[in-house]
Length: 251
Image 1: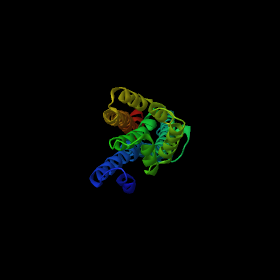
Image 2: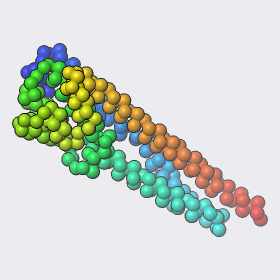
Image 3: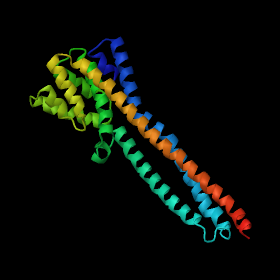
Image 4: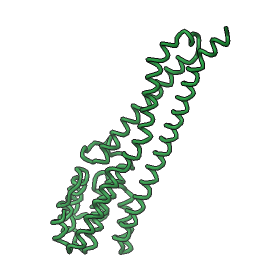
């Protein structure tokens, strides 16, 4: 990456650009999955406790729970949590695969969330090169030399094909697969006002903020569900421990 940037900018600018892109790559790759892991781990732990009580504790207390609603409720709750964990695991794998950008499949790259993350990296690369006042051909050549996931490689290839066909900058950027249409709109506005780099920077900051807010919303929701599941587990444990006392008091 350093060699590609040194061809079009000085060493200090190249170093700062690499730092910026590395920060964006880190923002894209790590934060969503790591933040979601905490509430997911709580849900998995609660499900393990449900399994333990259903398979080990309830059979030993079957005499005390005869005719009680608790075993049926336990099985229902366990089934619901199993489905929830399966859905969360599948969604997490799809999200992780999409963010990594190494599998070019619409199921992984179709969501706006994933497209925004890949468009964020592309926008930062384009802005860094545009600030050096490169021509369109030189900019696309420099983009080809930059590292990135397969999504980025395919985006640059599509952009270069459109450029060779004489397309405008809006057409060039719009031809990139899995592109965020908001990014295209920012570039179009930037071309009209002569402030493309400023509009790209605004897009980067806006996208980072929106992505962070989305992740926080998901984490808050999952955390609420996970804490609620702990409460459900506490109620079940209490009912199980209370069953022998209820039988004794009824005798």
